[in-house]
Length: 158
Image 1 (tube, rainbow, N blue to C red):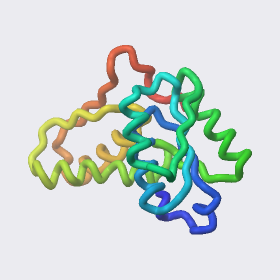
Image 2: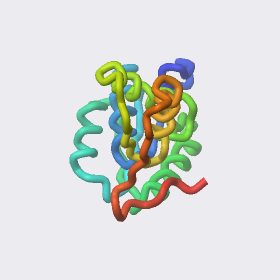
Image 3: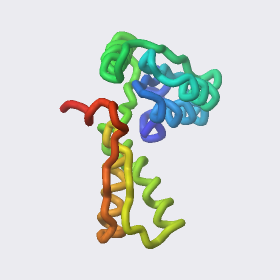
């Protein structure tokens, strides 16, 4: 998604909210594009995800740990984005993000052309939407099963 933004918009910087996985891709993109980014993550984010995000972003990102839940940190990130006139890069609810997530399905079918069942973590729904859309188009007989860890919050509220 970031590569599709105008250069003058990117120069103002970008912001994301993530429980960890989106943050890593965001950080990598910031470094690759030479863009400054701010990553908001819940305080409870596992250290491994925080360290991986720092590794991918190097000097191009700053991490802000805030809030007890993803929703808390997302609200803080969007408020920060608005106050600083930056661009918010959503973790799952944008067609460009969903399209990018769908590339995982392309790789799966390239490696394994016959897939009977695809088990997809739900999280925010971006990966499930992207992979599900691609599989329904290219392998309609594949049964797609969405998963959430026991004790994890339900799918995002509308």
